[in-house]
Every structure is written in structure tokens, then in C-alpha cells.
Length: 481
Image 1 (spheres, rainbow, N blue to C red):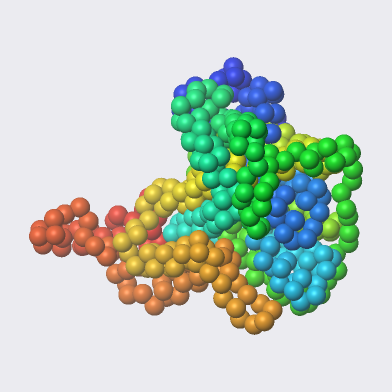
Image 2: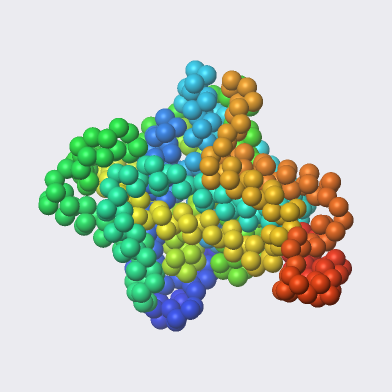
């Protein structure tokens, strides 16, 4: 039985050829693979540590269960979809609403457990009826927009939480990381993100010695005097310790608040699987249902013991985009590190001590890479953004997602950010398509293509060609014979 745990050595295991990629069923040498796994852990650690704190849950348990969920995901997908499952940020707002209603941590995890169960069932439906269900509801214009708004929705985290903590360190780390990604060669270019973090640690320590404490917001709070690199928590933390477990409780009011997030999670998984497929060059449609179900199982298992829900992580997709190493062996290594971090508060404290300014410089690049993968989906599918049927829902949804626009329906129910933006893109596209005139459904451009505006004969010919559908399909895909 193929569980996706056998990998062939890529080349000499050291330095891939220029332009080559390390495929999911390949690996570099084990020391390099372990190093890449550590980079994936660092990339996801910030959000996976912060999100449970914001939800009022144990961050060490979140890290440990992210490793367990990743193992489940890799086994379920037979090692064909390189992804890391970390704590989902989509539920931070949901947890805040539930707690504002008087709910406890058990209420939060119970509500999210139900969401995980619904996500699991949705994945089974996709497995049974095929990925065409997802493609019918989320064609490339929709999928690209969802990937884009997921990535760019993270921008305020950088702008308001990380970057203001130390703007000069953030700028230097951004420049160093960018140069490392572009200019370094071989293995070092593939761990550029990790090198950027090490550089950031060093710069923060040096600035503390030269300039003393900095007066800035610490973690988005009020501005105070603090060290850029504060390792005091490392000394206080134990070497070994179990996280805090608790059982979920189920309350209808909390469940109803959390359920709409299923829409975002399905779209998020579809977007992530699509993005990974674009990067690896593989058609992963057959694995989409499995990926969604595995995400649901991972979230159910995590919340059953008191942890937060999990989802495929954008940060790690950004790391793959930068390193061009898609080996699932690196994700097994990352899962192993996560389990160690979850059981060892001291190791967790080291990673948690990453200065905010350092994360600011790293996330500027990573989050931007994630968002631009959505644009790559549009380009590869030849989506025509001159067509208002494509342009309007994508434009509205992206702005809602990026700006974190919210819609309050009742005192206890609100949609915002990724969830609302995703809903607007999906429902907006299909509602407009149902009412649109025929010439827009066949992708006739809003503006003339490739001709002078004074060349009316050529314009007419171009319009006639587009109206026959010879250029693109009805949903913006390149026509396939």
C-alpha cells in the first residue's frame, strides 16, 4: 500500500540543477531535508502560535496537533499534496464572538469540531462526484480571486502587528531575504527564508546592544520600551511538558456562528491544492476531495482534545514558492519538529521569541507571494479580466478580503474578511452569470484586443472571433480539445 513515505534522491542530494524543482516524491539529503522541515516550522510557527492565543487556547497544544494533522493529511493524500496543516486564522473572529456571548474554550472547540465534521463530509462529496463540483462552483476566476484574497488578507497582520514593532529591522530583513532568494545559489537559495530569520535574530541582538530598548508596540499592543530580542521566556520554560487538554462542549448558538466558515475553508483548500498543483505541474483534481476530508479529520481530532482547527497553510506554500522544493519528506520533518515543540515548551519559547520586526520583513515577501499565486492561476487559465462577468465579482471579493470588510447580520452573527470575500466572489459570479447577456458568457472582451482603436474593421473581426468562443472557454479557461 502506497502511503507516500518513499522518496527518490534528487540528483546528488545536494544542489538541484538550475531551474529544476524537487518533486513531492523526491528529496534532498536527509540533513538538508531536515533543514527545510525546520524552515517550514518557522514559517508556520508565528501564525500557529498567535492564532490559538487570540482564540484563548493552548499554543503548545496547537503546535503539537498541527504536526499530528499534517501527518494525517500526508498519509491521506499519499504524499502527493505537499502541505502543512497549521492553526486556522479564519476562526479567530468566530472565537471572539462566541466568547463575547459568554462561551468558554470548550464552547469554541465544540463549535469548530462541528465545522470540521461538515468539512469532512464536503470532502467525501467531492470524492464521490468528482472535482467538477468544485470547478463548477469555483472556476479559475473564482479560485484565483480566493487565493489572492487569502494571501492579501494577511497584509494587515504585517502592517499593524509585525512591522511597527521595529521598522528598520523589518526593512533590513526584507532586503536581506529578497537578495538571498534571488542571488544565492544551490541549497542556500532554497533556505533563504530561514537565513533571513537567522539574520533577523542577529540584527535584533546587535541593535539591542547598540541602541538599547526600542519604544514601539509589542505584538500590536500599546507602545512600550522593550528589547527587540527577548529570550527571558526561554529560561523560564520547561524542557518537557504536556499541553493543556480539555473536552469540547456543543452549543447551538456557537455552532451557528462558526458554520459559515466552512465556505472559506472549502475555498481555501481548493485554492491551496490548485496553487500547489500550479507549482508542481501536477493535476491534483483527484486529490481535492481527499485533501478537504483530511483537513476536516485533522480539525476534528485537534478540537476533540481542546486544540484549535487546522487548515492547509499559506505560509508554507509561500516557502515552497521561494525554495522550489516540494518534497513531502520536508513536511514529515516539519511534523516531527512540531511534535517536539508541542511537548517541549522551551523549544517553543525559542521560536516564539522571533522579534516582531523580523517577522515583518519575512511576511512582506511571503504573504505577497501567496497572493500573487492567485494571479498566476488567472494567467495560466487565460482568464479575461476585461469581461465584467469576471472582473466585477473578483474585484469586489478581493477588496472585501484585503480590507477585512464585515457584514453584521445580527448581534451574534457576522461575516468578514476571507469568509465574506469568498462568499461574494462565489455567489456574485454565479448570480451575475445567470443574468448576464450571452455575449459576456462567451467571453467577448469589454475592450478591443490587440488592435488600434481606430481600426474598426480589425475591431469587428476580433469581436467576431471572441464571440465564437475560439479564444477562451465560457468560464475563462483556455479552450481544450
